[in-house]
Amino acid sequence: MKKLLTTSLLVLLAALFYPVHATNVSGNVSGIWTLANSPYDVTGDVTVPSGQTLEIRPGVQVLFTGHYKFNVFGNLQAIGTEQDSIVFTRAFPTEESKWWGIRFLNAGSANRLQYCVIEFGNASISGNEDDHGGGVYCINTSPVISHCNFRHNSASWAGGGLCAHSCTLQIDSCVLALNSSFYGGGALFWDCSVLVTGCVFANNNSTSHGGAVAFAPTGQLPSIFTRCTFVNNASPTLGGGIYCNDRNVSTNSCIVWANSGPGYQACGNITYSDIQGGYSGTGNINADPMFVDTANGDFHLLVPFLERLSRKLVSVV
Image (cartoon, rainbow, N blue to C red):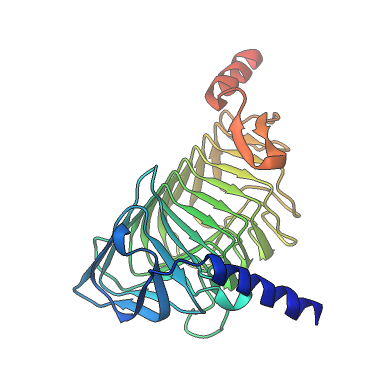
């Protein structure tokens, strides 16, 4: 009864402060979503059909009123700015209002997510990979993803924040934090080649393998992580930070620190990185990275990493 009253109060408060002039959307969508017509209330599954494009302008809010999918068969161009992100989130602070994530399904070649916040997605029903990718799921599609924040997303099977299958991805300057799944709390890559640059994976959780990132057991395509930070991720089985699954993974100039779980925090061909506990490979160090404020999630460095790395290398010459 107490839980029911609390949920009812949250819904009532949300309704009191909810924007009156929202634009309801469902079914097939294309064209341009503008700030003037924002927020866009998703009242059913939405689909960008093959051969069509939906452009979402900076500052737009896309609010899901239930467990609905954002399917993309054509092209989605959600391009925000540093000052005005595009936000995909639930409409109400309840479990029932969590949505099903953006799902790129054999989509077009011009998909792009830039300066987007993707939160409270939940891929929770088994079957046809519907339990993959709480925030974003890609299959045979290669969207460019940059400066995005994936947070509070979950998947009952794989890739709490992001899951990609048979893709070639570039992911740049993104944050994946507080996501969870069975396999790959922050992200799972399956038969993919990925280049991940300047990203932060923090406080993600897997109940099996790969607290931050996991690779599926098939496919030998090369993947590279460079200038990334993996911190405070957890897995009870293997790979608190990264679980490679014998894939062709390279890690360069990264920090892997304070992740929990048995086995290595990281794996693959690792060079010029700071790995807690140490790791064999060219130029690797094992030293406190000196984050600004881990308690409040500020994983910037008090001393730039490359400067500290150069100091360490000079000290051992």
